[in-house]
Image 1 (cartoon, rainbow, N blue to C red):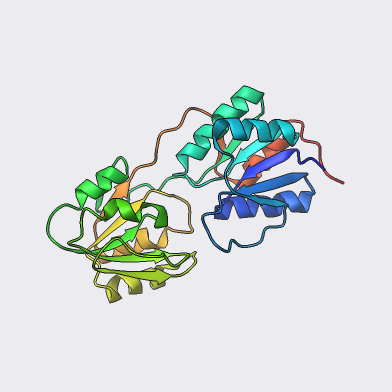
Image 2: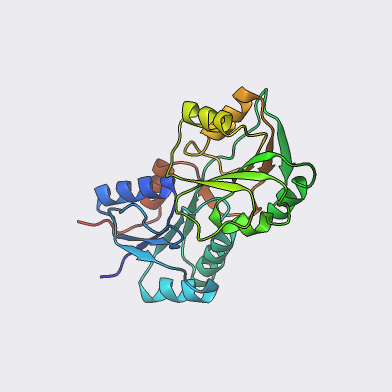
Length: 250
C-alpha cells in the first residue's frame, strides 16, 4: 500500500502530528533519521535511515506514491530540510514545514548570539569554565579545540567516547522541567551554557533556568532556509492538508 503523506520526523512536534494523522486515519508514513538508538514508537508505519540526498528522496516520493510531504525535522536539520525543498520542487509535491517558533530573548536573558557551531566554538576560547554544552551528540567533536573547559552534557544515548579530557555525560530523555534544570545548573556549578535556538517548549527549561540564575548563554542562531509553507502547530498542518486535496483513510 502506498502512503500518500510522508512525514519527516524525529521531533516532539512530529510525534504529535503522527498521533493526529493516525486518529484521522490519513494514509501516512513517518521517516526517522536513525540518530537515536531506541526512538519512541509511533502510531504510523515508520522507516528509519536517510534518503541519500535529494535524488534519493525524489525517487522515494515517486516510487511510493507520495502526494504531500511534511517536514517536521529539528530546526537545525537544515540539510534534510533543503533536500526536502529541492525534491518536492523537482516532483511538484506540496511541502509544508511544521516548525517551532524560535525563542526570543526576554528581560534578564544574557545571550551572546553566534551564527553557527563554528561561532560557538570560537566563543569558548579563553579561560576555563564549567560549560553546559546543549548541542547534541553529533557536534561534540567540534568543541575539542577548547579542552580547557569542564563540559556537562545531557544526551539521549550514551556516547562511545567524549572528545574532552574533563566532561560528564548525563543520559536522559526530555522534556525537562524548570526546577529540574535549575538544580542541574546549580549542582554542576555551571558558568556558561551553549545552546541551539531550537525553540518550542520541550527544551526551553534550561533557557528559563539560565535567566533565573543569571547565567550567560552562547545562543546559536538557526540556519536560514529558502522560503516554504510553514506552520507552528499540528492543527496548521491538518488545515493545510485539508485544503490540499489529501485522500483520507477509511
